[in-house]
Image (spheres, rainbow, N blue to C red):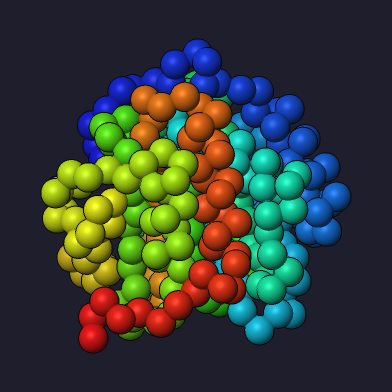
Length: 265
């Protein structure tokens, strides 16, 4: 969820054991052929980054668990690992949990009250500092980045797109997958931005227009030229939201879904 409004806490049915999840994600990652390393220790939680096939010509980035009241993303990554959804056609870098204390509490912010998705310029939180140190130390460059989020106000799923150079992209495939799984939010305006088609918004990519940087703006400045944020409606059943994110991950890594961008020609 990138809006400031919404509920302050996840319903009890959406909460899950973060220690058990982290153990499971390590096992699933190894079974799926990923290298699993810990990039940070936060409040007793060891946070993993999963990497695979980094010698590939093109690599993709995925993150989730930035907001603790949005559990579908982390659970979808586990489901995608288990089902083999991450294509060998790309290299992968995956951060499945960035805000473990928020997930424990079911709150958007960390236990220290920081909204991580507004902290990628100020770097007040240990979580965002450790995340960016890991990225900077690696020198990774990505074909595209995808962040998995949820929105309490959404009437369906939707997508933020940053693709200022209009490169070939998976946008249409992602929108179709959202439509099939949770339906598209048909609002004419989402999060204060006009939609350019059902469920698609293009907020400004220029960092100078923002005092507070979300994760995707930081990534655009340092690690990629194209980024997406996928939002599912938090009011929908958790299983349905998880399936929507997992299907989007499969589409994101399918090279047949990457098509030339004719929307700006």
